[in-house]
Each structure stands twice: as C-alpha cells, then as structure tokens.
Amino acid sequence: MNVEQQIEQLRVVTRYRLQVVADGQVRVPETKIDRPEMAARYFWLELGDRAQEVMAAAFVDMRNVVIAWQEAFRGTLTRCTADPRVILQAALLVNAAGIVLCHTHPMGDPDPSPEDLEFTIRMKEASELLGIRLMDHLILGQGRQWVSLKQRGEC
Image 1 (tube, one colour):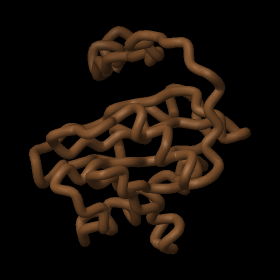
Image 2: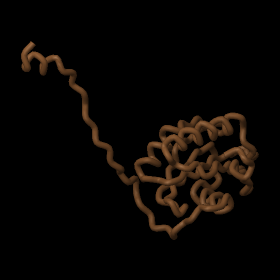
Image 3: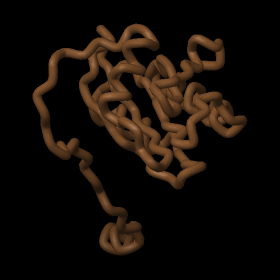
C-alpha cells in the first residue's frame, strides 16, 4: 500500500478547543468561605428562598476565596437530579482549588436524604481524582435553617 492509499485509510476525527465563556460579571467584595457558617451566609444571599430544589456550587482558589459561582441544576419542589460531571467541568474550567456545594430543600427540612448523601460521596470521590477539594455540601431549608455535611462528618 502506498502513502496516498494509507492516507485515504485514515479516520477523520474532530479536533476541539475549550475556552471559558463568562456568563456575566458582578462586582462583589472578596468572599472567603472557610467555615460552614460563611458558606451558609453566602448561599443564602445567592439562592434565597427558592420554590424548587436548586443545586449550586461556589468555586474557590487556594485561599478559599470565591472565584466563580454556578447554579448547576434546578429541580422540582421535592427533588433535583444532579451530575458531578457538570460541576467538575466548571471547576476545571475556572481552575478552582475547591468546591463548596449547596442545595435547597424548599419544603423546609434541611436534613439530608439518602440521595443527598450518595451524591456527596460520588462528588467527593470524583473531585479527589481531579485534585479538587470538596470542602462542604450544605443543605438550606426554610427559615434560614441549614445543615453542613462537613460538620456532620459526611463530607
């Protein structure tokens, strides 16, 4: 087989280049999330009292200062299906050193469900593989109630 025939036999693949595209910018004071109380305060400002479950992530640098924020998933009144891949993809694109997760329980009770705990375990394992710290996973209920899975030893 000559060179021209070998080239004809080659498979064509698409080559891609990824880049971060900002969804908008806001000026905010430097926000450092180094304690669950700080994370809860930050997410209350961002998420407020939503009528449906919302999963969000704050991405932090090595000093635990927020460098980006993502509302990753939106669900129904009682559930939100989240995928670690989407959150980790954003974390890699912004060069995050750590992630603080948060989701809402609009029905009020901030205690984690078995699905919440399972997702946290999957997220922690996946983020560790990529060298990104999963710092905490908070659940916000009604009346400014919240639970930190880190404080409970489940994160």
